[in-house]
Length: 183
Image (cartoon, rainbow, N blue to C red; front, side):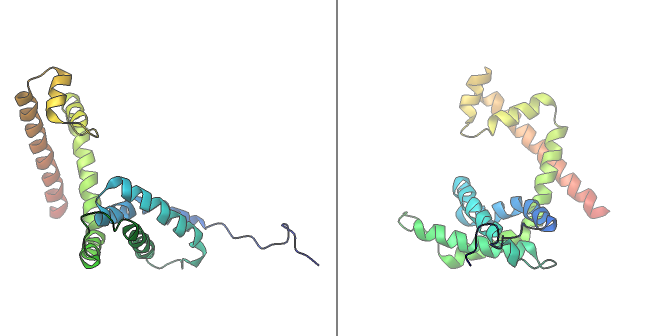
């Protein structure tokens, strides 16, 4: 008797817990990968390849274990594959150096995520004109002189405004962390 498509065992869909962990850790996993390759586009490509592997191995994940450590190990293998493909580039860091950076990134991921959240909150507290200026300046490929021309202000004036806004953001972030440390 031959098996048809209706009698073949089907792979089970990942559990709800797995899906939650998977989505919850995407940003940290991306930052972990980015710490090893430095180019955001390369990191996104590796993240996608890593996600395919994670999803295909979802049945092997043991609930209750450290999900971030598990997916980070998968990401390590994908980064190594990527670096093997890119060996022809002029500047290549040693595996030991990149592993060291990756480990530190993983250790500091919670702190960095807290800082990112504080920055978002502080950006939201800026005056609308200041927030818009920061968003325009840090748009991909934007430069200060071009921005000054775009908004019709002298470059020196734009640089002074950006400096003031950056100091304000730094003060806000430091105050948030000081308040958290005191509580």
